Image (cartoon, rainbow, N blue to C red; front, top):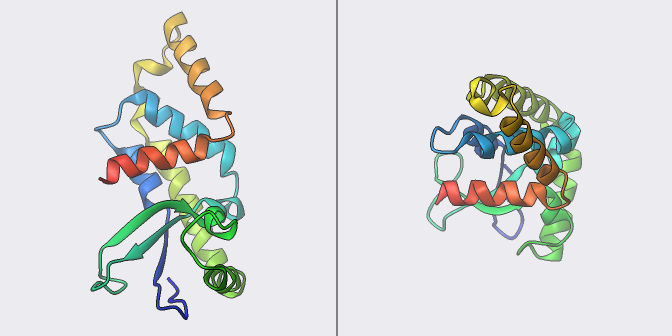
Length: 164
C-alpha cells in the first residue's frame, strides 16, 4: 500500500472478489457469473494486477488498521485516467507498481487465493449445474453475459452493492 506524494494512501485488494464467491447472500447465478468473468479476464497473476481493486483510507484512518473504502475502480481504471487520481498521482502509482519488489509475489498469492475460492464456491453443488435443459439455458445466458466487454465493471458494481 503506497502513500503517494500527494498524501493519498492507496490500498490494493482482491478480497472483495473472494468474498463475493463465498457470499451466501448472493444467488448462485451471480456467483457463477463472477466465476466465469474472473476466469475469462484474470487468467494469470499478471492479469490480476489490472483488476485489483483500488481502495483508500478515510481522512482520520491510516493503514494498515484503518477501514478501507473501495472506490469502485481498479488498477487499470487508474492507469487509464478513469479515476480521481491526478496525472502526477497516476505517474507515481504506475512507477510504484513497476518497481515494488513484492508485487509479483503478492499477485501470485492473490491469484492462488482466488482460484481456491472458485474451487470452494458452493455454486458447484447447486442446481444451476444440473444436467437439464433449464440449467443449461441459464448457464449459457450467464456465459454469454460474461463475454460482454463491460463484464468486469459489472462484477465490480456487484461488489460495490455488496459492500454498501
